[in-house]
Length: 196
Length: 75
Image (cartoon, rainbow over all chains, first blue to last red; front, side, top):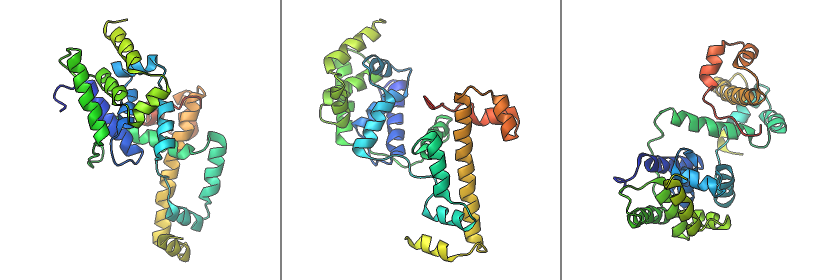
């Protein structure tokens, strides 16, 4: 399936997998593919989404709101108890940090740190995250889009077209809510590919 | 209360298992706090030199550890 994918398109799929894992989701679904596109700022898919006003933070917080997820706390109950025994009230520490840096400040940082380590080339955990049928359909549609455009490669722009054409997944829904139709995506993508 | 928490609350500070767990937790907390504070300082325009001075480490050490971090927008 991935033979004709460009390096960036493969990268987007890897980033989608990272997103799924970081959100503690057990499958790669359409929303993770969208997040994967938004993570690589050098890709045509990213550039098109940027022009269409679709941004990473906005999409990620909607995914968290709709599907749930988010990083697990850095300290669990047993840690908190061990700290209490030596006289540290972690809830109070957390309260003060959040007072200054906002809710979930500790977890948000740990989220960034995990991603940073992966980008530096440390092997991500070996566990395999499977695709949902909808995500597979997106990749198939990407292939068809590439063929229809007589492109001999599958790039991030084709994945984006696949995402809007899939129609039923969370990504398609979020894009539709933001007035990102397949017509608009096609227009922006062809502008970008012709260098405008 | 989970079984683990029950065991922990019965344990006294003389129990090495609890003490060591607290040390490990503190270490993680310190790492998190350092990241948070360095990020904040950088966003406020502090130089690596200034940050290193407050952390009592060399400028090279703090730069190596934190330089490729993506800083949080608006914080």
